[in-house]
Structures are given as structure tokens and as C-alpha cells.
Image (cartoon, rainbow, N blue to C red; front, side, top):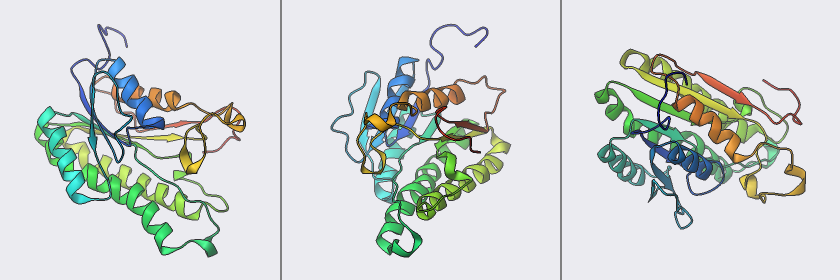
Length: 235
């Protein structure tokens, strides 16, 4: 950025959910590389080792776990939250079970609500902050076998936009990052498989998050939509 000196996020403290692998781990690595202190939360923090990042056990579907994570973030002076934790199940409508529904909706939607809710008062007291929700390019479209997953992403998009309206009065900047196909472990697949060679990398999505978080204070990045060029054009 023009006039910027030193790392773009120097002095910032940023909470990241789903931070132990894939996109979340790349976000933690990139943000710390640009000067931020990261408080990373994940169910399994065994592999979470990033200089400048602290990893905490976090189940975004459990209020007590979220409250403990949020307390650590408040104590550290967090000024931003990246909601990245997410899961997916892809089945025809006739095969979706209540267990499938609860797993996907509790993680993707309830998890976003609980974690954000736990830090809103903190951000308001600070006079503002940032929330970046990593959703999907299917937060505004759907496809066969995608009913449950896309419903959760539509809901995350609604939560994101409502929060943007609510936070506007006290300086909360809210961004939705909507990636297309990304080469991760998502959907119980393996990272690095040949058919994913031209897909987005986790670092591409992390770069979008960094862009939103490092915008000048007078700029609000409402939405970022990114795709690999091999993916059909979609909005």
C-alpha cells in the first residue's frame, strides 16, 4: 500500500478458526509473515506450529469451547476475526440425513455465529475491528448434490451481510471471501491429487484474506470472489 512502511499487519492480533491445516493454516502462515500475531483455533492443534502464532483447541459448535477461545482472543487484544472453519457433505436431497444436516450446519453456520457473537462486544468496545468470513463461491448459487453445503454457505453469506449492517455504526468492517475450487483436504479428499493441479492453492485464498485485512482504515472490502481459471465462470 502507498505510504506503508514495515510489515502490513505489524501490531495486529488476528483470530483464525479452522487454523490447523489447509486454508486456515495458510492464512495463519501468511498473516504472521506480514507481522500479525495470530490466535489460531482448531479441533486438532497437533500440527499447528507457526512462528508468531498461538494455537488453541477450538470446537466452533460448542459454546464453552468458543467462549474459552474468545476469552484468549480478548486477552490478547484481537482486532480481527477470520471465520474459516468449515465442513462439507455432498449428497442428493433424498439421501441427506439429520446427522448430515447437523454436522454441516452446526459447523458452518452455528460455528460462524457463535465465534463472531463471542467477539462482537470486544470489537464494539475497541471502536471497531474486522471480521472476514471465508465461505465459498457457492454462497450465491447451487448444483446437484450441493443442497446441504450450499444452504450452509447461503446462510453464512446472510450472516455476513447482516453483520456488516449491524457493525457499520461502530466501525466494524466485514468481508466475505468466496473461493472456488481449492486444492485442500476438503470433502475427505487428498491435497495434491492430479485432478486438482490447476485449482486454487490455499495460499491464494490466504492472499485474499490478507488483502482484506491490510486495506487502509478508510476502505471496507465487502466481498472477494476468486476462481482458478480452469473453473467455469460463475458468480
